[in-house]
Image (cartoon, rainbow, N blue to C red; front, side, top):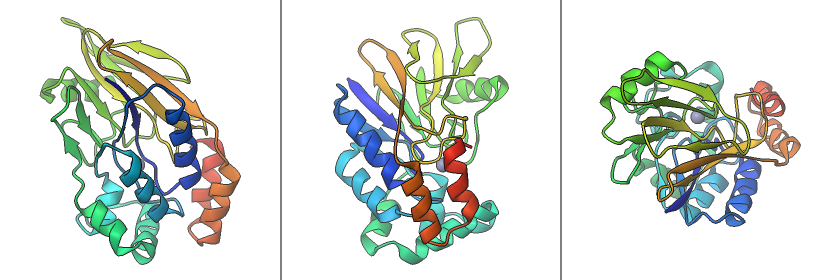
Length: 243
Ligand code: ZN
C-alpha cells in the first residue's frame, strides 16, 4: 500500500491544506497522521476537522494529550503551555471529543506507528544514533514511523551493524526493504530542520520505499493567524525560518 505520512500539524491550517492538496495529487491511497494536531498554531478546530475527514489513522501527540487534560501542562515549555491553554479555551466540544479518543501508539499495521518513539511514545525526541539503538531494540516492527522532533530524518540498522542516520531533504528516497528503521517525516505545521516548507512522507509498503516531500504554503498567513490570536509572537516568527 502507498500511504502519505504526516505529523505535527500544530494548528497550522494553511500548511495542512497545502499538504493535503499535494497528497491528493500523489498516488497515495491513505493518509496516516502521527499526532500533534493542535498546539502552537491558531486553527486547531480546522486542523482536527481536516484530520477527521482525511486521515485513516491518527495518533495522539503530547500536545493533543495536554489539551485534553491527560498530561499535566507543567511539563510543557512556556510557549507550548500558553498555546495549550489558549487551545483549551477556543476548541469546540467536537474537537475535544475527537482528540480524547486518540492514542499515541498503533501497532496494528505493517509498520509500527508512534508519536515520539517506540520506548516512550509521548515524550522522547529521537535525534541520536544511540537513542535509535535503544528504540530499535524494543520495537516489534522492522520499520517504525515516529514524529515529535519536527526533523525529517531516519535511523537504520543493518544486521550486525550499529544504527546510523541522517536528516533528509525534499525528494530524497530511502530503500527500506532490509534492515531495521526509524523514520520521521518531519513536521507539517512547524518544521524545525531549517526548511520552512511543510514536511511529509510517501511510504510504499509493497516496494518498501519512503520518499521525503516538502510542500510550500502561505507562511505569512499562518503567522498572521497566530498574531491575531495573540499567541506568543515567537510562534509566528519561527515558521519563516523552519526552526
Ligand atoms: Zn509536535
